[in-house]
Length: 291
Image (cartoon, rainbow, N blue to C red; front, side, top):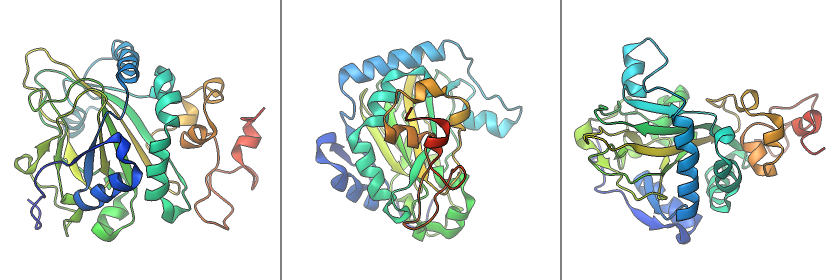
């Protein structure tokens, strides 16, 4: 357990509260459940898209390593390339104003330069054990070394597309762990609280918060969600989106969504040359995104 006791409970707020109130809660607790983040129609359509994708894959890790198998989940399916799989994701979610209002504030220190680091749908099946606890920003080790005073490296929007309960594997969170003095510490499952949600709710967390998938102790329930992270624009994304998303699909997306998936350049410094460029010019011009 961390040296600072976790703050009890996971705060909840309605989506209508807006970005400033949401981020004020996250600053204190490390995460918040945003209710009715998606409408019933949106989450139903999104879940249908994900179910079709899940039907094509098997549970378990692709790595022949016991630690990876435990982390990815032996009875868990993980679907990537969600932009291609789901029209709702690429047009509704990746063009949702609230997401960008939140991200502009989180990454104001990078001149509002950020992109999506990963997007994966996760289906936890019966019998799956708890996922090892972790921080999302640990992909970028220097931020864990820097600790609680580091700038935000990443944030995670985790949307329930089925009901989340303690029994079916709701994501477990350690509120307050973003403020622990030692980031080598990830606590224990006894420190965690289940993020119980209805379909369409969103667990929004800092990359500094300790969390992990819960155990599915039901006989037949499947717990599904869509988790997508955004990272500062000077960091390498986890997924190589421009190499897996077809250009004709990307061209149907909004400009800000295209930038989120790496089809446009980012500009972390106000007077810098930018990143992900071609010949000192905007990438989108070179690849013809505005043709």
